[in-house]
Length: 371
Image (cartoon, rainbow, N blue to C red; front, side):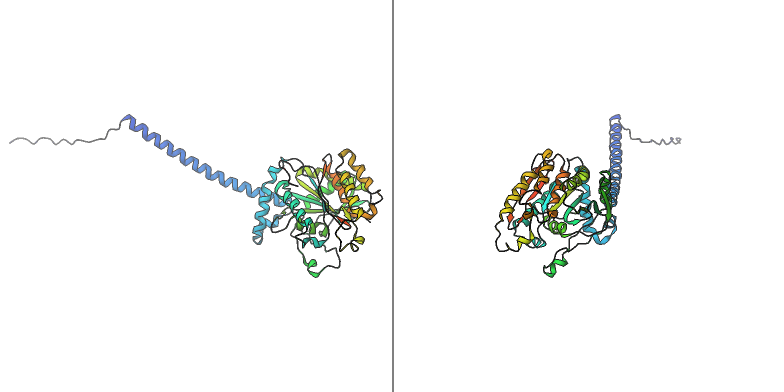
């Protein structure tokens, strides 16, 4: 009987070649890198969003708009202000903002959408919102004169409208214009005036129609909203052209901070004679002569401009064109704020005892103007 043979168990192993090992290592490395990149992108987006939210909040605080970022009922306005804020950093690299003189007319221009002045104000407003893109507007109006030697600055963040006109239909006194003020910008103005030796005080006041009626034409709330803070500043209650030129010079540096200066008045403004020319739109002789004299003075070389504008008040037709100079003096403020920038008449229209001339001092940076 033969003895049983021992049972041999053979262990089978799979051998791996060196080339296969390298491929596995490469695939694992690529997979690891992809995971790391994905994590980095995710964290980067989160940080970016946090940074943007912080930037928006800081901008809101700067102009007293924080309430708009926390109120669920103002989502649309918040979105628009955020978009406006997003281009502020980029626009800081641009040159100084220009200065605009607007002939604002009466409140009826808001309803005369086929009037040439309405259309021109709209074109100017479009240039401002699409090319200038200011972060705030400081505006001087013919309808606010403070003290003989004192300037007032509106520090209110919630600003009502002042219906400072008489004899119009009742719906004129129900007009609205969306706006918000800025205590921060108002304080900048007060600080600059103080440094220039000009007595100034902060007050809480509404916007008069020299601002909101013309702005409603230039910055129509539905089609071309302004969406930046508006701070109104008074004129002096005097007729000194040099004092008003100095007033403009005092605030000129605001233009270096992407703050737009607008002055609102009328190139020729004689309400008394308006009633005698209601049915005849042809310009009166003094309307034409003074309008052209104003153009020559406002567009004079900057070194000669202050004297040329002061001499306007001494012309024989000056008191016909402006029985009081309140609607003329804003252009002295604007020209003072213009510094070394040259003035340009963008457009004019003589109409009875009124002229609608519109001016800009300085250029629109990094873009051509169609005006």
